[in-house]
Length: 422
Image (cartoon, rainbow, N blue to C red):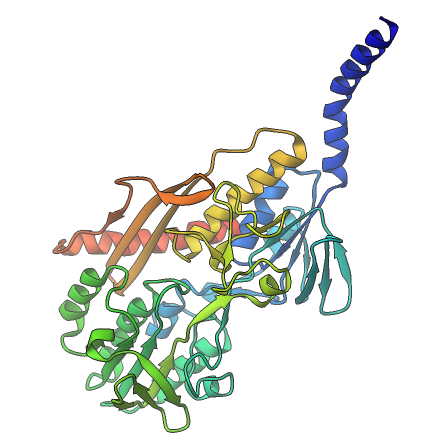
């Protein structure tokens, strides 16, 4: 009996002490987030909001973050460069420690992250949102040096500025050639919006010019909507060739601004925009969370790596089933991961894993289109919720298209404020 009393009393005392132990663990916990974009910035901000006693460090080499969303509008002349740039002062005000260095290595066993300066950060949870790296030489002849002549502009920054400069210098009547990879890649509608925005610029400044899209696939996001919009606004300026029309590029000669397709057709450009195949950002590979695809398989319920415990991967680097690689998706994922980590550290039940995505695309200044979907976790995998996918209707009137263009602009302003600008 005395031993039973001691056991019962010990259990009771342990139960009473549990909340204080959890609080102490939360107060000493350190969450490191790599990448200050849509996914990482969201995770860092919402961790501070949901678990204000947890130390959060954001590692991001850029002093100012320029977004891929709306960078196409910069090419069109509809946005200034600085309008898509964001500082990290808002995250600092929220209590996030921001370190402007490159993440170089991860030791998952010791739970450390090594930075470019040699500094080592210890972490209890690691959130990776490193975006993409490009698969250099996946297309013969297209390496990092070739991008100085034939920019990809698929990471917002110097490449975007270079592509705009080349467009400005191009002769009226020239040909803009864009090569588009097979899925998966960052922002599935992005190349087709870019084609429209380049066409908008040419229509105003170089109206005799042509745009040729060489695509490694036959179908793409919002295909019918884009084609209808291209025709309505730009006539025959944009020509698209899918894989069935010999649109898959296998070789690039950046110096000659020439590409070659599978069946030997050659196309010469005045401006050559090569969007190559992609993979998860470098640090994901160093963390051991990528698989043979080059992307990161994750658990649908909390975006924890399917390979390494306590490492969560959000945004473009993750392979999230039907959920596309978009800024909206990354923001949603970052918030869910923040809530899941906060719940674990505070001893609360984990949130139900529900996600949403909307992709707005601009075809012209007053011509917007969109697609949206809702997703949830089932048996550890992300799946669509039946009948949740919505897409803009074909043959909508001008007022409808103009409203969607406004919604897209409002989305960008709202999500920028949500992550960086408050």
